[in-house]
Structures are given as C-alpha cells and as structure tokens.
Amino acid sequence: MKKQTLILLLIISTVKLSIAQSDTLFNYIEKRMHQCLLDTSGVMGQSFCLSNAVNDWTKELEKYDKLIIAKLAGQLKQDYIESQSKWRAYMNSEIALAEQLEKKYYEENPQMILYPQIATERELNVIKTRVLELVDYLNLISNK
Image 1 (cartoon, rainbow, N blue to C red):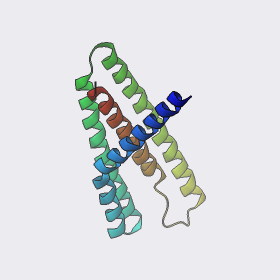
Image 2: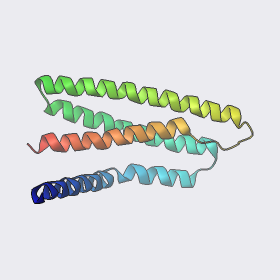
Image 3: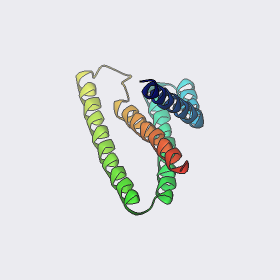
C-alpha cells in the first residue's frame, strides 16, 4: 500500500512539474494574446488577437511534431505519425462543430454586436492542449 501511494505521489508531482514547466515555456503566447485583447476593441480586434494566438500555437505544434519525429524510429515512429493524423482529424471535426455552433448562435442572436469567437477559441484550446501533450512526449523520449 505504501509503495502504491509513493508511486502515485511521484506521478502527481511529475505531472505538476511538467505542467508548470510547459506553462512557463509558452507563457509568452498567452501574455501576447491577453495584451492584444486589452489593446484592441470590438469583434475584429478580438478575432485578430485569437487568430494570432492560434498561429503561434500552430507554429509550436509543428516544431514539437518535427522534434518528436526526428527522435523516433521504426514502428513507434509510424504509430506516432498515425496518431497525429487521427488527432488532426479530431481537431478538424471539433473546429467544424464549433463553427456550426457559432453560426447557430449568430442566427439566433442577430441583435448581438459582440459575439463569442466560439470556433477560434475552440481551435486555440485544442491546439494548445496538443502542444502541451507533445512537450510531455518529447520529454519522455528524451529522458531515456
């Protein structure tokens, strides 16, 4: 029982450390987005800021994807590539759904001048989450 508790505590502390390191690593993207949102007004400004953040996270996604592919070989590399392909299909599906929800919101609330950027925010969150996962994968395979 003590051994299982110790292992669980070790896993939790490793996850917390990994999250803290990842948050610090990409803090500049979040700060730039929030500053942009503070400095701009209106729907176009909000859209611009969120789109820039999506682009920044996408660049990080591509960077970590290439780093991981470079470190893997054989079947593990093929499995990773397949997993990424499935993840991209999931991402596209999520964004399409968010766009439909955004359109529905717009149609039901035509009087709204400011409307939520549902699809862009969802895309941002999905990509950001995947980048943090890829950082964890890279750390795992780099610590062999």
